Length: 403
Image (cartoon, rainbow, N blue to C red):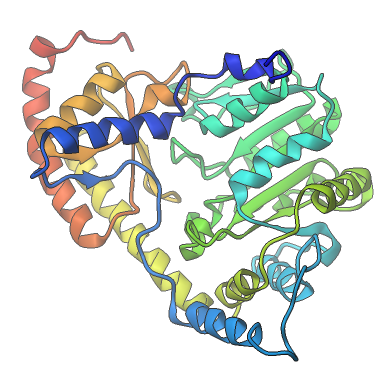
């Protein structure tokens, strides 16, 4: 057993969302008749759109014939999907080359697997609050992690500082968990910083389709110079409801990053046999002929987010997100896990405790807009009653946190 990776001992005992799930399952076991509504895990609830299902059926039929059956596909993805991704960017005014695109089985895997191509002694800059998979993947790899602080003072959008440098920089925008989103001008500062310090940005754009305001970036390649220092990762999980289907992509431009591009291809060819043909045909349909349907489906989550934020404004709550993002990040003034437990017991609503996202996050809570419209409306109806009662009893039941 001495050969096991010792870095695993540095990880928390339970992954955040596994811990939330375990707590909810225990409550269900104790109170099986409870009608629990989840606004916790960011999982899609809208079904796959019609043209995606048609593409699935058509591709499955192809696989049943001698003429069109396909075995192993290209390690970097079929050209038809890579071209659909290039065209998707082009519709937003962003130019990438087909050789820049690598099809993967989702953004999370792309984020973690990329670390294979970097030295074990690299330093990594990660924002706090943060999607915990960034931290855990780098802990497992034995990397040195430095944090750049996001807080209410900077709107949870930390900017570069000459005092902190690293080889790799993680940026997620629109952000998970806070819902905050960088403007193109703000990303210009990060790109300049990366170029000046010879760093590589790993840009997680998994929620880019929720960005609505014109000044909010949907791709880091909207910034001049980004092709020389940035890797972009995206996914159809939230865009098209592919959380259970699994398909995404990684963009690594040529030029200054040519060696990185070729190393990633080598890594994929050694450790992966690619994403299945049927799934890639479904993804092509989501980005092309079925995209109008996909946009309508996304509109459901955006409407849910507006319903939540309108109510939070009415209640006078402090929050970020909900606009340009499916996540809403709000302040409670009490311990995050205590609030999670109280909300579950009193309102039968599941949230995600903010303290699981970093050291700056206790007192904050993340909820999502990914439930159905009816269940979201019911949850907010319950929450309004809950919050008014919570404000009245907060000082007498909970130990207050310092802001």
